Length: 337
Image (cartoon, rainbow, N blue to C red; front, side):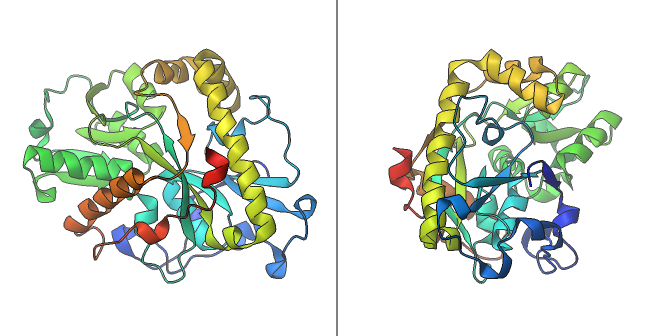
């Protein structure tokens, strides 16, 4: 299963739910090889395959580079384009573990039988989440974007940043032309001149900047910097799979120690895997707002996510207020201290 890459097209077909995410027709056809057959429960770690979500070039793919030994169970790593897709795959019972921002769990919280449980918090960078404007733009403040076409990624930190900046500027959603796009489609639209601004994140920011884009605003002071690690409730409830999850998060935590110690080495390792310039990753590391620290859940982290959820509810992007507390599960906290 290593190297499988999934898009929304792989996961979804038909139906609409909150924020336009297609959930009603969720299918596991393309994930069948990742799923336990007939509800099979592994009797020991050696018999178990832990199904883990990854992102292209992100830490969960670099255990061997960080000097971390192979675990006593098999890993099936599946690559995803966003945390919203990971949340959907967990709910489709196709994944045991995955990382995401504070936002995707909010959008699945009200689903009957929701499987997504937040088990830890990664405190990370927010300077790589920005509002970009094209070269030559006259905009100097977010207020200058009134009436403009602004790209964003639905149900992600990008969406939340846009909501918060509108609030700060005293503007309504109707005061702009919001354009929901995937990061890849957003880059094409931005470079073609179809967008006046773009709220985006990750290494793609540095690609756009090299082509002349300017950062109008970073997410510093808007985002908490909390990125969440999540597990499927059924995986946490199964004794053997729970044991594997505890072992896995302990190993995952050590990857960040390796990253924080040597940004240049981390940049080279990512570039080798992704084909993206190492300099983009090195620049991202140099400009980061904080080191990456993976730890247990906290009341402060829960309160932070509740504030995010309330922002989406107030904007009527989700149909009702969500109490996020049932999403949080501290059973893996001892492995993250």
